[in-house]
Amino acid sequence: MERKPRKIELENDEAQLARDLQKYQDKALELGAARVKILRTDEIPVDERVTLKCQIPRCFGYGGGANCPPNTLKPAELRGLLEKYKWALFFVKEVPSNIIVRDKATIKERVAAYQDVYKIVTEIESMAFYDGYYLAFGLGAGSCRHTFCGLAEDCAALKGEKCRFPLRARPSMEAVGIDVYRMIVSAGWTIYPIGSGAKPEEIPCGVLAGIVVVQ
Image (cartoon, rainbow, N blue to C red; front, side):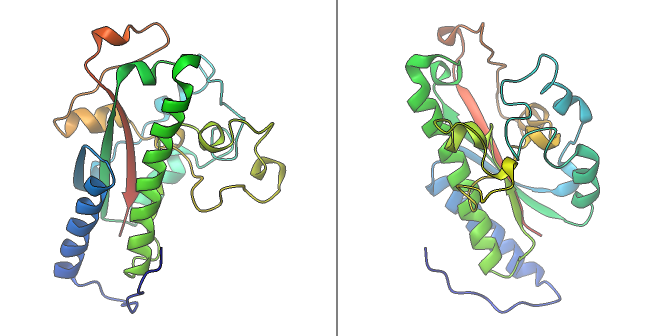
């Protein structure tokens, strides 16, 4: 999508920033987010135990992509980087529970749902970049390796080749240690743990989340 760049300013206009954050919130809702929250970066919980869960029990995606542990940003690194930012946009997308449970019968719907989250993240990140927040970055949900390259034999970027989806592929929030469950509950929203043994009919709704750290 073609965008009109805004002149870079060294000093941020707080009133303009507030308007922009509201604009990004509205856009996220327009793109399919169920709920959106503008929050300070010091409200983002980063915990090494989150990436521990990628290993115990070992996730099928662990080590399989350039944006999954142990190949991506470490929680301690993210924690230090977030200290240089102030504002972020956090959102959730609601998905039928049966789609979240890993069943081959719903794999197309599941992949589409994760791709929707990445689409919202990249759209907001792009808007922020052209608005002058050139250091903005976003994180998605789930493994980009399996979301975009599930039918490929491997992750091209992990082999040192050009990523097949360079503008859309990125780590998930969990991959870098963000406690998404805590963030959702702290926002006053609802989330259920949905594992392979879950019964979808007993869970009202599944939730996927994404975030864009703006400025």
